Amino acid sequence: MSAYPPIADHGLIGDLQTVALVSSAGTVDWWCTPRFDSPSIFGSLLDQAKGGHCHLAVDLDQVPDVTVKQLYLADTATLLTRFMTPDGVGEVGDYMVPDPSPEATDRHRLHRTVRVVRGTLPFTLEVRPRFDYGRAPHALKLLDEGTALMQGPGTDLFVQTSAPITLTPDGQDAVARFTLAAGEVAAVVLTADATGGPRPDPLIRERALEDFDRCRGFWHDWLHASTYRGRWQGMVNRSAITLKLLTYAPTGAPIAAATMGLPEQIGGERNWDYRYTWIRDGSLTVRALTKLGFTEEAIAFRHWVRDRFEAGGTAAGYPLQIMYRVDGDPRMPEEVLGHWEGYQGSAPVRAGNAAADQVQLDIYGEAAYAFGEGNDMGALRGWRAFTTLMDWFCDRWDVPDEGIWETRGGRQDFTYSRLMSWVAFDRAIRLAQTHSRPADIPRWTAARDAIFLQIGERGWSTERQAFVQNYASDVLDASLLLMPKVGFISSTDPSWLSTLDAMDRDLVSDSLVYRYDPAASPDGLRGSEGTFNLCSFLYVEALARAGRIVQARYAFDKMLTYANHVGLFAEEIGASGEQLGNFPQAFTHLALIDAALALDEELDRRSAWVRSPTG
Image (tube, rainbow, N blue to C red; front, side, top):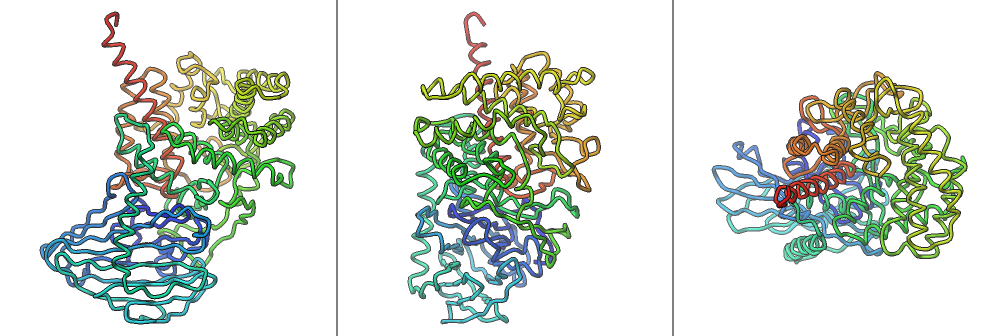
């Protein structure tokens, strides 16, 4: 625990209500409970001294020569950290059993099973929680030699271990040293509980092993619904599991990322809290899952969006906020955790997100996505909410906003916001016609066509021969890679191909794509950022659809090399190939799925053309 691990040096586990990050050193250094957006119990990822952690690994004081490998059991969220030494081989299994039932919202159990498969190895265990982002003290009660109760504010941490692990106090924390021989298994179970805590269980090891099988079985059963049989099945499955892990089962609300405060630039101020549900990110997440055959997640999210609309709009008169807490609460005031130093000194560390108060008109296009897929679109309640939203939007689409990237440099007429406004009306018209539902189609059509003409006139730069970020500048923006994807323009239209060429020159670096140039388009923040993984995968898809298959596959294959050792991506890639920003990022993984599907389709089409007798 003497240095911060790389952001990418983690696997993700979770139970569909909360998640934890486990480093390859065997340390749980991030766990917020009872929900994704709750205060942390373990937060040493953002402050080594004050954040708290749970460390379980081979004792390096006794066995300094250790090789560590971390992996997922195939097609599951069960994580193994293997320790290979001259004296033996051992492994720690980390997992949480998914439990989407409403009665499970107050109790969450993190399992850590340790076994030796060869030789004999010594291990060390440290359980050092720091409640409420390290701001609240806790009290330790040892109930017996293998059971400890750590009482914090509102939530207790109940620690149970099996023989031969004997807990001893270290201040208000609990530690242990123990040895296992080949074939021996021990269990450590951490239960965060707001109901008074469970009782000691003499069969804790046996139940932990049963839960190991239950966890693995859940993920195999869930993934069985996938229809994907393409060239990149391993990476697509991993991305699908990651998106599922980041979805709050009781409400169906996906979050943007598992963490808060991880920097887009080491030492910089671009450190945001992403543990919330954005209308945009959630819509794109469920669309990606739907394409793979997972429909329940999309239905749940559509109902969640409908409920947000029915709950009432913002103080400024907009029917939807851009983001919410996973239970639909619109309140997430941003505060600075000044007592935390931040990852490698990247401060300030922010909890909450002030961008919730921004105006981002593109979300109504993404809301149309959320409402517009699946067989439940004909539901009367959902259609009433949707038509009311679209009728309101007819009078509101043509105003400046803060845009997709949540810049803090003032409102602009962003081309992407207009693009997604066009999508909102275009999809609404299609839905009304497809489902024979009542709607003011002439009014919606007039709005759609006006947006189309406006983008062509004001979003196009004759000088750059490209569509640009906003109507007041010639700056390029990678969000516009979605233009052909949403059907606004053909992937082979000359004006789109010239836009793609302009992006190649300005935003692409060795197949990695920047969102925009902050120097050319000030965003109100100091410092810089890395290339944006979402945009890099959107670029792959745009290349593939434009017929540039060789370039697209090369860019995709290179992009996959930036995944971490277990197939996870953060938000950005730094100058030296390091992962930056919150981790893992839903945006990245949903875009990976879309890029793989597009590449598969275009490669299959080309192969069919080559095999054709007339080809």
